[in-house]
Length: 160
Ligand code: FEO
Image (cartoon, rainbow, N blue to C red; front, top):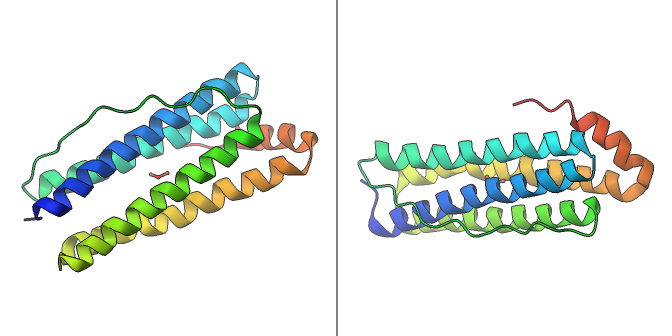
């Protein structure tokens, strides 16, 4: 049984993961409207990954005999000046999520909740990967406008 403090932060994290999916879906629409269909595809896959992150926490709460509490999801941004700014915002968002994941892990440690500590390890490593992949795309996009079209072609290959 996980305690009330842990349950609350885990339920909050479901909301953050679902918001992430919503944000990436909004970014996907922006890119599709700019005819950057490959980047839009990458963001679509990313949005689905975020839903799977939310589902993972949802399953953990249920399996530990607790209640999932879903809250309202905030409206995401829908306009960016360009795709570089969009990925800058995506990176800032992932850094925020990383901080949130780390905080849950710290709380689990403080509350001596071994199961949640182990459960959060997967998310800690996932955040390393997520930040890294967004940072790499951003660095490439910043190089030149040609890179945007090259990246668009490559990112069209991302599959679930
Ligand atoms: Fe599920 Fe991108 O954090």
